[in-house]
Image (tube, rainbow, N blue to C red):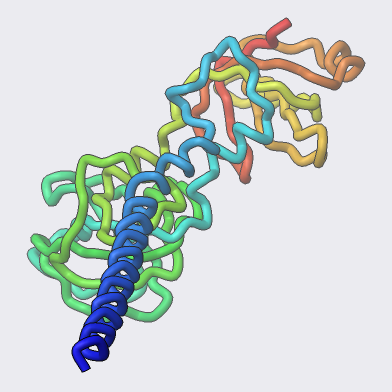
Length: 266
């Protein structure tokens, strides 16, 4: 009888040890998954990105690669936080809201277009948490489509460098997203691509010459370069492959990256 009791006790002890071991393994896995989401995930995304701070103007960038990096935020869903642009202490908004970083500044950083009519009264001191999809840059700020008002005066992160494609648990302050979106502006780069054409325009301000480069694999125009002087278009037409041009990124135009003060690099 004593041997039977000892055997039963031993079996219960083994089962308890195995059960504890299984729970410990699951807990460890959960922690590892969280760590990947919050740390390693961002590092992996950055490894595949072309970042302006890592670019040397003497090293030519294929036009397709620059185009991809410049427009990497397009089509990305973001959640942002900021103040509504208004002229009174409160206003009722319906189809769109312009967001600014402070109640003391006039310029808006984002233009949020709502998928469904909002019809909501907002106070000037309210911080809006808005979710939407980045469409493009415009004179009125970065355009967000299919927007929805998540909440008023909710949690947000500030003074960070956001990454496109990174999971957002909280909203990001408007100026942080705005800076990240425009990170390539005023950056001097050298691009390499296939010569597409030269466009000469004459206005009251003078004559400008723009060279368009396309991706040699797809034939799609990706970069436009406004030249400092008139280029030799005949020479370019006879040597279309691997044309190198250095200039400063200033804007986008109809889905192409635009460079100013450009020169051809031999």
